[in-house]
Amino acid sequence: MAHYFTVAARLKPGVTLEQANAQLKLAADQFRRTYADAMEPRDGFGVVSLQESIVGDTRSSLLVLLGAVALVLMIACANVANLLLARASARKRELATRAALGAGRGR
Image (cartoon, rainbow, N blue to C red; front, side, top):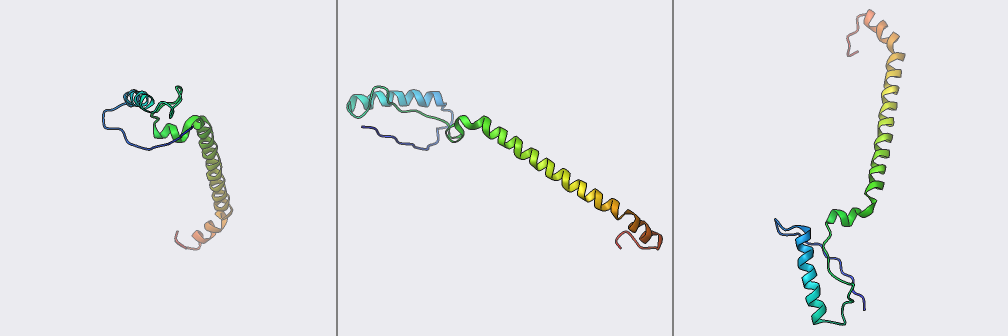
């Protein structure tokens, strides 16, 4: 008979994961003695950090994805900057003519 439960909880301040795992190992041994047919010898209780539980072994993949997104964002920003520079250089003669006629910067 297999039972799988996932529980989210907070550790008391000052308690490490190792201490919590040691306490749960004792609790698993006591549970196994009380209910011999409920747990296999290889089964037990354990504590894992929430971040490790969510991210797991995909951390490197997520970092690569973050890098790719940052690269695409930088390329997009460079494209917008180039478009603005091209537009400004195309209007350079127009702005010089307006300034020669006496128009202010706002006009």
